[in-house]
Image (cartoon, rainbow, N blue to C red):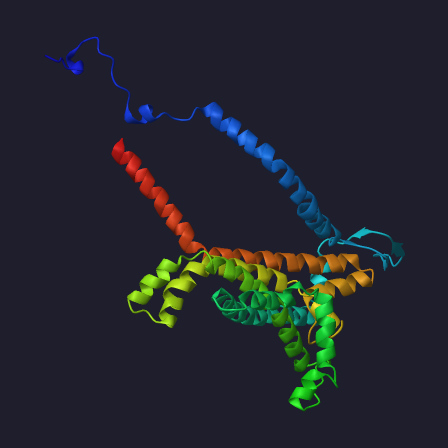
Length: 336
């Protein structure tokens, strides 16, 4: 007859469930963290040199002023002089304040308008490129051509189209001054920017569409879902993470817009002047402190927009992650 182990006085107690599975020793965890730090150190070093140092150097430059100036006693002082936040306060006062708010409005207006139009057109491009038809490879290649053209060349191309005797006026049969300082110049910049960068969003969205299984669409089609229902209920939710990344990249790029309006319309035009143009103009006039102040303000503006974009659109994901963590802790307590 078999004897039970638990009644024997010399029986060895069985280890607990957590002990049977085994926990990772603390030394292994520390060695893994050290290995991760060693592997990430080259990347962190490059980021510190390429991103960290220019940001710190730019902020430091914004606190100084160079050139010939008058001190408190009326004597001419030449060279570098610490001025604190004077460069920032000067940005918001007087004529420079008017120029700053005009550039700030133009930067925001171009970003919102172009990114909204590019998102709609890019999604349409992706849906077209995702379809199976003869000549699809040629269509994909032709759609990506505007994105491959350098921005300066694109600006020259559209400047030829929008000149007074160009193609645009010939099609409209009107003499519109597209490259002058006015509302028409804003429209010209928006058209050129949307034409060039819509394929970028289309390419990223196409990559997201190719990750969706066809069985999902077939099941929805069997259930009687129409094309619009399949798009709103299947395509858009599944491609949303890729689309948000594309929109975020385009927003960060549009906020730094400089070369396209500078080549297409020209510099020192109030209708298309952006914050990067103001910084470039100040640097060209050897006012490096003021230029660094404009650049620092633009950097903070971009950082805030990126943070709000990620925070607001990623709130549900963070909440789901926190909820999942709480569920795991509850399960551990129940097992214990």
